[in-house]
Image 1 (cartoon, rainbow, N blue to C red):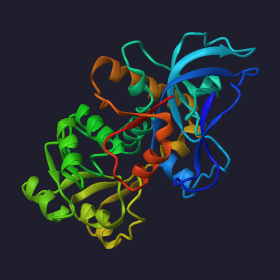
Image 2 (tube, one colour):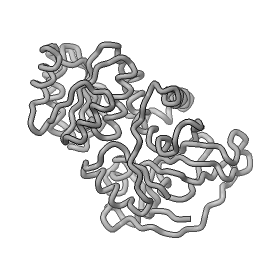
Image 3 (spheres, one colour):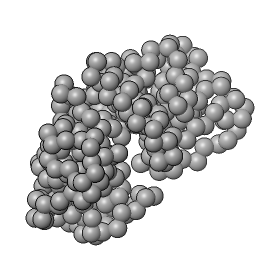
Image 4 (cartoon, rainbow, N blue to C red):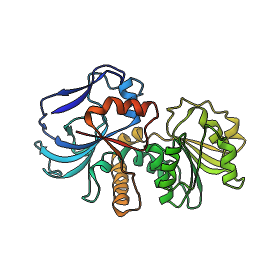
Length: 323
């Protein structure tokens, strides 16, 4: 089989396409032929050696994929050859074939394309977890989403809109703002030329926003925090722009709540609840309640360039690698 191998930390020149023996599934394991592998910012961080959960080279990057079961090991009864699946495996997805445990697989309905299947899990899982478990977004509330033109931000817009919320997007390029508007945001702010706090308050008739979904961190976090109304909620999703230093008086004086959203850390402690949550997300996509954007398709051998684009925040929407 073909696989992308991270030979040393760093995406430039350290990701090689290799031919490897196709693995056989051992007892309690399933082999999946990959039809599409999702590429994420986390994959780029891991390859660069900058992620909190390290993967030591040499290894095959890629946390999620979609494809067809093509072999099952002894003791596996819940999956059969030909089943359409999504696999959430942490690493190993940038390859023709992957090995997974039955618990790492989610059934993919016939009506959902493999490319969508390979890209919804992390971004929609995070947004669903944030808006339904870490806080509760109510119909009519206003949600400010930073980094709104990337995969994480677009999923947040979609989930918030499905819950009856209004969304204001913050994105740094015209193309990203257009994607956010197409997903359902009612307005978009350019953080490079506009003050996020001032513009968000203008768009809410001076009231401020109810919830901030902060994907970016860095210099965007504080003006986004200042855009909150009294007793608003600030959700910490990530910080590709750097870890923000927020004045805590902004929290105290306005009765605001800061909420950490780390879905990946919650999952191992709540496996059954997570499986039910993912089933709800799949059902919402199948029914048309949620509308994941069609990802951009790139060949497997473009992995290094794709991860570099993600790390440098040049990517639009979601990207899949096609073996």
